[in-house]
Length: 357
Image 1: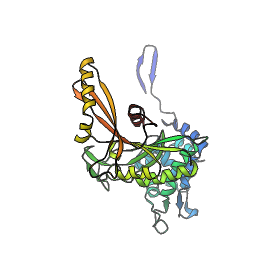
Image 2 (image 1 turned 60 degrees about the vertical axis):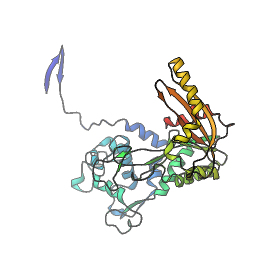
Image 3 (image 1 turned 180 degrees about the vertical axis):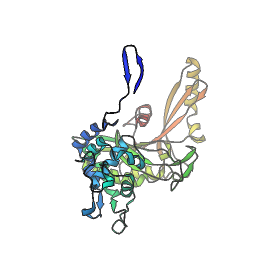
Image 4 (image 1 turned 90 degrees about the vertical axis):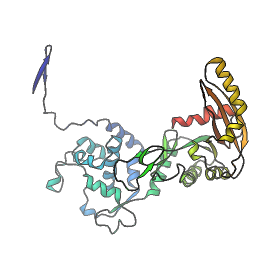
């Protein structure tokens, strides 16, 4: 097809490029997997009850196809009705027949990979019914998958670190249809799920899908008990500190940390009692702000206990900050001692680092 020229250059459209792809970057992911063996180990977390003589796509192939698809931005299963033709994705998965011309059934030829219906069976298989279900005969061991995430984190270190920080957070996963368990969340102003995430630096240690009618901290103690136990089995001398916003400032979490020698630095929602305790510092910050025209802050380190929800008195850091025309007090609670970190260092350098998770 000829188009208007550009100066002396002819502009021609041609369609003889053959089998092409826009996902060549996936080859870099394949190199990573060759080093850490992630997909082989993830596939080992599944049990396959299918008849071996009727299988064209192994569990490892199905898991790899889904994982590479997600990593390349194809999050919906029906994307694979087109992706199953992609020779580059077939190369990433490890298929020898990159064009699918050797498929058993005639209607499948030209498609080296699995369709969305096959991947759907992989994702919906249940351990308790996989042996008898007609179609969904592959079941995942969710506990093994949880352990794998932590194992990958542990293996990334040549030697045990002296200290690690675990960041907890919840965020919205918006829903746009009549999905099971949909719930309207007032804070996010949409129907969504509310998954729990736990990171250490760039390493994901937990991703737990939850409905949005849960408290942000729901299930955190169970996940921490599992993760901390697995870490300490390998690194018994490593110091562990958790960090999270005020949505995780719950007595159950703090009490568990105190009992199990785990540090914590948690945001604390302000109230009238806390703001009164910070009164002198707020006045000093206000005067400094009015004098200089710039934001001013100072800190107070004090002991505090809620009237009902806390089981004991704890160390609280108050940040008395005044912005031009606006007061901005903030609070955190911690079981770290003043010898570990003074008030300003604990707030500005340790707690505020959670924004990087």
